[in-house]
Length: 141
Image 1: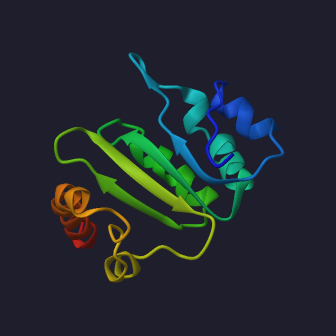
Image 2: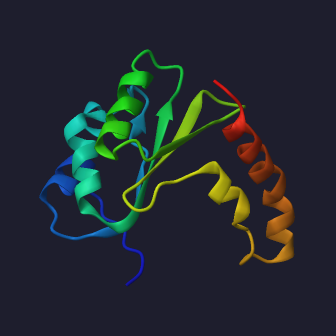
Image 3: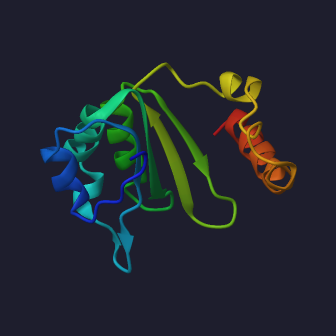
């Protein structure tokens, strides 16, 4: 099986599993905000541990939250600085990509064609957003 969905406490799961994963998607918000256990240093360290050698974790964070720099700093620490962050223009969220594998760089992303395996209709729909993301990643601050 290439994809499996597991309903469990995410922090407990990554702490206790012996499995390895290529991708972890972390989005643990409810009406009170993000679960504290999903933004702890232990959690991000455990995420790094359970990723395959070239694995990637993505995390959805609220970039206007007062502790956003603390949370993103924890991810940066767990992944030895191998982190890219993309802020949403319409909402106060940001998506952080942290890689266990080779260093991620904006230049490498720009040289690859992330849409090459999609049909033209999908490429047309996503191209503008991919261009915006690429532009945002090169701008200071």
